[in-house]
Length: 87
Image 1: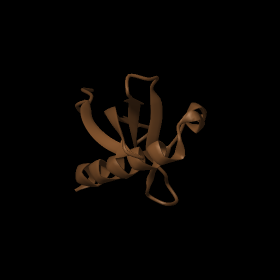
Image 2 (image 1 turned 135 degrees about the horizontal axis):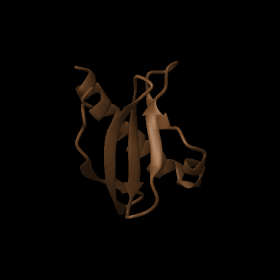
Image 3 (image 1 turned 60 degrees about the vertical axis):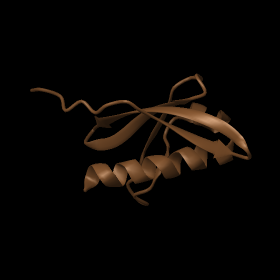
Image 4 (image 1 turned 90 degrees about the vertical axis):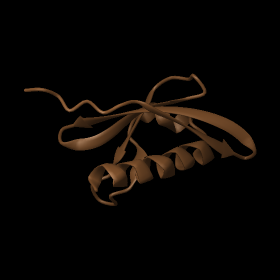
């Protein structure tokens, strides 16, 4: 079976006046949309669509180290991408 590989993409956000460069790689895990995400060259974190809210949120415990403003802005951007994938 051939995997449906989704392309890595990059986007820039501004949080509290500071630019943040985000690299995200979408993938499917257990039939659910997930994203491997790093920002400003940092470590990779996992974001995904929550079953109950249908909103993108962080999924790994290490993501708690991300400032809430950055985490929420990244989740908002990924939400828009996830909606495009679902269309």
